[in-house]
Image (cartoon, rainbow, N blue to C red):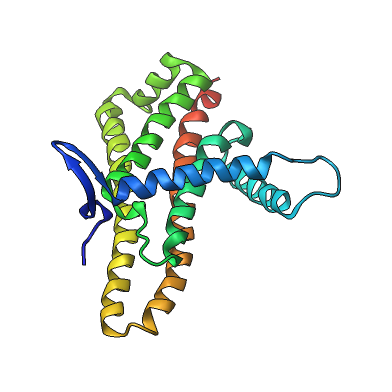
Length: 225
């Protein structure tokens, strides 16, 4: 039993490595892109819509509502980033029902990349909302003494995002592997069901935290005007 899908290597040449994490990540991205294209190619505005469009509208409306409740008054500006985060993590975790599949979120490299995406998105939206100077001044709030602490806070919360998601998904996979060796028929089924719920919860927590971080910096210009 291996701890991470990074340990499953398909091809390696020097420092270039193609492992299970890379394969499943790109596979999921292809499935999501193709799936979204197929679902949205025949969208309608009338009363009679397909079941796929109905499900899609429920998901989009739910994400928009959550974003707005956190404090972002124009959720349509942020749903592209936050919605993608949620759907990728949720789909990656829910695919554990397929035999032999290991979620890429069980790799620290994947969760770090997702956390870095949030790390870069926060100043992007902050600068877009209030400008470069206003965003940089936020690091001096409430006093200039807080500058190093605010910088450390940005770094530590990024690390926390990456490690939290990685730890929860990896530990779940290890428990399933241990129970599979003890009782191969009963416990793995139960754990996979719980894993689906845990995967959705982790996707929700990750995306909500990303929304909170963005909302915190986007709301600062309004407080200063």
